[in-house]
Length: 476
Image 1 (cartoon, one colour):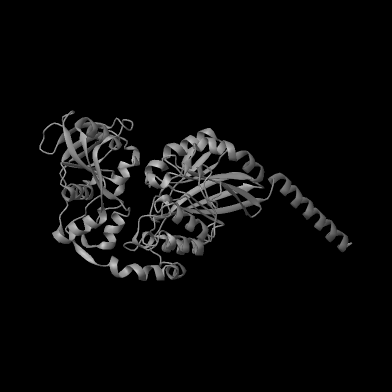
Image 2 (image 1 turned 180 degrees about the vertical axis):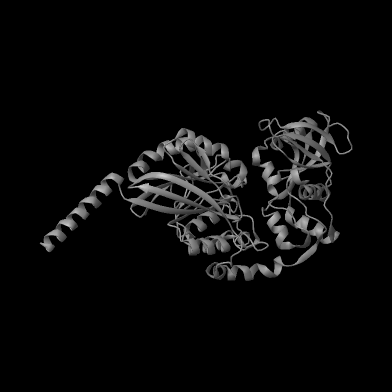
């Protein structure tokens, strides 16, 4: 009798368990994704924070199910740039990234170097809307974790042809992002339970994707360098970003009933207070030894911070623009602020820091432009200047942003007067949308590398004091 009661109790327990499972639906699954973007070659921490080596420590501690990167792996540090991004991929390989995508700055070292880095990567590099003259970059990838199929599609900003040097894009096509998704989503939907856009996109492009494809529940973004402390919710789509330089790493928690996504939450983890991962440090030892001696040479001293943004006074922009003009002896100098990648801190100025501030291999170009052409060029967007004062309105569309401009002495810029002007070769080629320079007269690429001239200027001056003269003003 006792055995019979035991058997009945067991059967009742099983029945209740099955009933509970039926009521609760499919089995519950929790997946953790961690993500980075816009590392820009920053492997080692600065002032005890940031960098891929510290990110690696946090990733090891949290052990996510999937680790992804949203592009711009290269360009921006001495360690990366002197070896064309190779040490960045070396570290990412050790960290176990499952996928990354092409950012606009992946093209900075030229197509041959990009092909080498794609081959070096032990993870897929994706972009569904970039057509390249070599194989190896995929469009999509399906990653299986805990029985869930994650369909990853890579997208690269349509701005790429003007935000890397145009000479690197002559054999590359960048397609419309919505069209690329239309082409690739039907097949990806069939093989995936959840489609994720890994997008190196402008914020406007992110919203465009979310609105065009409401079934896409997650966009892991990059490119804007603006971290999202709280994810953006656009309809049913969650958009996340981590800023730049490995200052934050993102964590996304996904809860599923069976294969159906029920809940998404995201957070930023500040990258500080941890020891850089020893495996990451070992991966870059030989690269570091190659550059350390040269990069540690002290060129001079800065008495204060020379900021790269106009909002903070733009002292670094002013210095670089003045070096343009002093080197060539022209009346005016103009350059795209994006050419200056970071501010100069107070204290010793090393060659390595100058390299990080000016990582691009830009050369100085001189030409003659009419006053009308100068104004049309300034109207494209906020432009760093020397020999001028200019006011820009960011509320207006590109090519209409110039409010006013005068010569540095307060005199007017006369439309039909010819002025001598210095720019860089990136702008001459149409970079950042500057098309007027192609119509200049007496155009001459001097072959002088800007970084060398700035280094020489600092060496001669010995001491730099921030120059803030409001030559550029912004209306928002």
